[in-house]
Image (cartoon, rainbow, N blue to C red; front, side, top):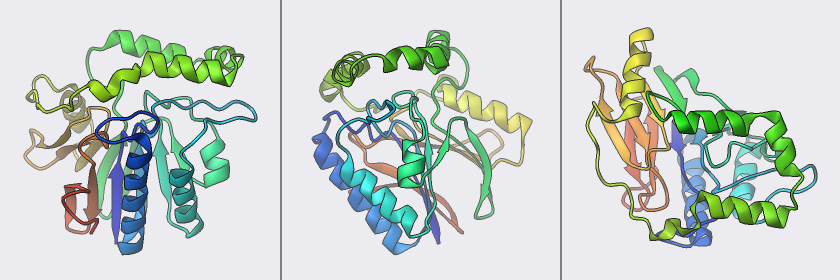
Length: 252
């Protein structure tokens, strides 16, 4: 059995492929992993470019992706979804209608004998104080209430404008900045000092597939990359964690 991790699908905007083509790719990956050996899935944030739930309305689209998740959970395979900075307004729709388990904070857990810390990665580590203040603002109940007063057509148009509708013109991340400049590495090192038993730190948000051995020479920081360009994911089995690429390798 294996456990699969992926993040940063950003469904809703084009990149190397259209959003619909990327959705089909993600659905094919989910289906292949599930039918091969998947024991669970961890989808670690920014699944959508933007998501908001009104009382009786959710964003249009993504029916193939959501349908595949429902098919997987109906079969008894757990699907864990983490909120990211683009979909931090996820509420209970995916929980009630799809059957996922929703996480809003990094999760400390044990899987297949490995001690893991899993989270999207936004707002972790040193610096980035402007974003951290903005995130606290957006998470405030009154902010959600005010945004819900907007008509969905206007609300979605505004969200796509501010989240970067021109993302398709941006190149993929290509450079690892080094341990002293990668703030998720700094965060992982700090958490490792607090909890030396941790084996794996799995994050998204950075948009660069990374497999980096931490200072103790044993624990690893793995960034899941993204599906705008890299189609990267992590497979965990009894032999350990492997960073893989859907276009280059099979799910198993």
